[in-house]
Length: 222
Image (cartoon, rainbow, N blue to C red; front, side, top):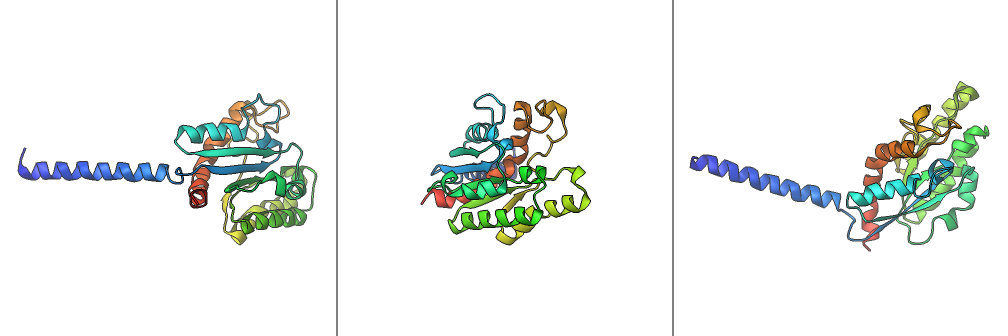
């Protein structure tokens, strides 16, 4: 092997080593302190009719912990809850010391035909309160049933992007991505995810949650 080849090879090894350190640093960012993450939602995240430990918060925490993230996830999901209900219980559902929140609300508003303007106002107040507390937010979007009509569906669907833009928070467009209308991933009611469905949801939303944890890291370490 020529001197030039040996130099090139050494340079490549150094570059790979540095890349490895960089990736490791990214993956473990915020891990100096445990991030406290609350999932504020309804039955879709609460683990409706699922075995203990099989719900969305629990499966998400297992996946993140396996990847080296120090995070404590609190399941603040209440079956049947609306955006009004989530707003009303915000102070005790998101305790002091919380660094980040996944807001998963709105599905029951749509099922009940709540005026999209009211749903917007409720989420607006809720997110505003969280941001005033310095809490990082990931807003999980929801879609209205198509049988409510095109005007309602459009108005409801516009809520989440508008709020994400207003507060400059991350938006996961559709919480049930890859699961909605897929029988193999749903309970017999055709609405709620089964254990396999939750696993799909966790896989799809995970990149967004990782970014959320990195944003919350600075708060967690102070």
